[in-house]
Image 1 (cartoon, chains in turn red, orange):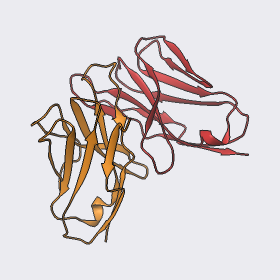
Image 2: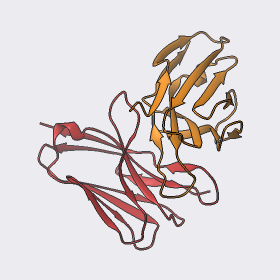
Image 3: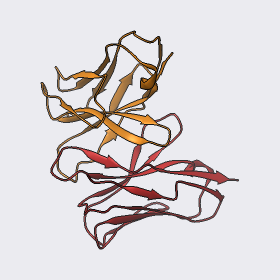
Amino acid sequence: GQQLNQSPQSMFIQEGEDVSMNCTSSSIFNTWLWYKQDPGEGPVLLIALYKAGELTSNGRLTAQFGITRKDSFLNISASIPSDVGIYFCAGPNSGTYKYIFGTGTRLKVLA
Amino acid sequence: NAGVTQTPKFRVLKTGQSMTLLCAQDMNHEYMYWYRQDPGMGLRLIHYSVGEGTTAKGEVPDGYNVSRLKKQNFLLGLESAAPSQTSVYFCASRRTAQGNSPLHFGNGTRLTVT
């Protein structure tokens, strides 16, 4: 079945640094979603991508839908302490009503 | 602007006890989902519903039952809790099954089974 592989699994960065993470699949996705989960809360949608090659920003966050439709990237510029959390990529499982989630990238920001 | 609301937030059960987790959404969404989240495992789908009165199995349905008697509510039941069901449970909903209809999550129920 379809799977999403996220990397890195975890990151420790200094405040002010830029962050990059990615999500890859062996099969094609028509939609890529990026969620952030703060400690003790549910995932919150950050960015949604619907077209191959699409580049979308949300404040300091930028995400791209890979041209092959098998990957997506999320970048965070000038990180701040509240960026701490787990970032998940997700995509709809083709032909079903279900979503597939990556295993997440855990981000820690050192002040 | 409640969105997706889960109750309770925390619960401790003894092995063999039963309980029901409640999920309510006020967005008139058709589709509702129950996930569990365990360390290193990401989010795994337990059961889901594509509309009032319907339910279907996800990846890890064993030991759980669900009901969707009203469109806005999706209940997750544990008939006989086991320590392996210690987890954080998230409910989610979406308006349609189309790709441009993302999931909206509740804040989770943290369940411990001793």
